[in-house]
Image (cartoon, rainbow, N blue to C red; front, top):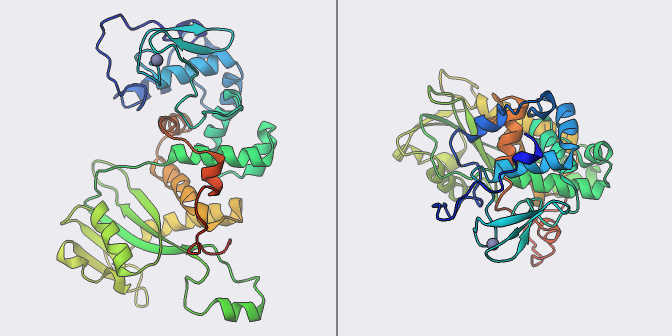
Length: 365
Ligand SMILES: [Zn+2]
């Protein structure tokens, strides 16, 4: 797609415009297919299929802008301030001026890229890398690859993780595995005295508890996960999450943790006692074990040290890649871009400096 095809004037006065359009992009069915398979004439204008292709493609600021604008506003540019559709385009500054509210806006306004001086030729390859690197990518690698500081890269990656966060209201059903794990807090390098003081119980001391649910493959879709950080693995923490996310009457499979006792009132509850066996026919949590191993590989191998405060962001990232694993790189990239609108992450939010000091957060890993 060339710069001339910026969808600037497709609306006619009097057109009925969905007021939400432009705020929740890419809800349009089939639009993803359109972007992925965009045929625009010349070879150079094809949507990239590799990281190298993405770097080359988005190096042209006009092409990057046209791409993002077409994704964000498939039916024509809509003012993010007033949802107005009449505007003029200031070509030299690559911004629009709304003719209704008179405000100016760029393609970044109202997205995770807002207020960022980083140009799209760096942002878009950054989204590409995080959406597609199986073990994640560290801020040091991104800093070297894009020529930004490590601190900038760290902030960029966290903003992209916010875009990867998917929130859905539809419940899981069919066969659902439920399991919990602990992340961080490795005691291997701890001094013996400190270890005896710090690690008193089994498993979770100094670690963050994470709960996962995996809906197994069915005829309608391949398996998918939902994961969240939980304050503890007590019954009162875990069971409400199960009820919120899993349709009543579904089959749920858990280990013998007492916190799951009582689920059989609403679910067909299969329990596998790991001290006896790991698999008993359909009753196992091996799908989730596989996800945990992917997650831990990224956490240990790539990120090495994660503040407990930020763990949920890494869960979002790993769950995104897992749930989109059957897609190709270009498809995952476009899916990641679906989440950029309507989300903001300021540096203050990110480091938590706007929060009151909280003693409930465990010490850094
Ligand atoms: Zn406006």
